[in-house]
Length: 156
Ligand SMILES: C[S@@+](CC[C@H](N)C(=O)[O-])C[C@H]1O[C@@H](n2cnc3c(N)ncnc32)[C@H](O)[C@@H]1O
Image (cartoon, rainbow, N blue to C red; front, side, top):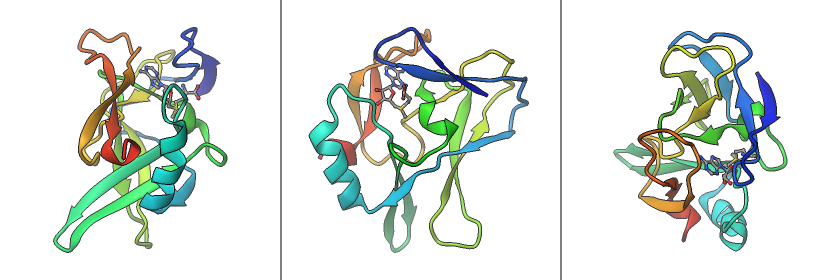
């Protein structure tokens, strides 16, 4: 995988597959600081408009209620912090638990991916709580909805 400039100001950097990746392959984990929902909201609200946002908030529904996992990759992260949103994504996020209650946000190939393709996932995942429309989307796919999906937590 390599991080390169996308050539589109709003998207800035993007991640390119260095080799072919078969469907179902684990590609990366979205690493960063684990925040409480209040901390995520405090970091997001003042700076949301027009800036790159590295906070991923994922919701899981349990009998006891909703568990929100918020991960901020702005200061501490890995290559997955540079992965952009696409309305026709080739990756998908799955929450995976390995011995601790806090889940890992893992990115898997949702189809066969060729070397040289941009690696991207849909920011409006199955775990996104109350989706709203964010800034304009520049994914360029034919089914683009025109806006980045944003979790309600990011907009208050
Ligand atoms: C996790 S970062 C992705 C990496 C980012 N492109 C960079 O250069 O650091 C998420 C931010 O990238 C930008 N972005 C990602 N996908 C985009 C898209 N499809 N259209 C426009 N901007 C996008 C938005 O600013 C978003 O808040």
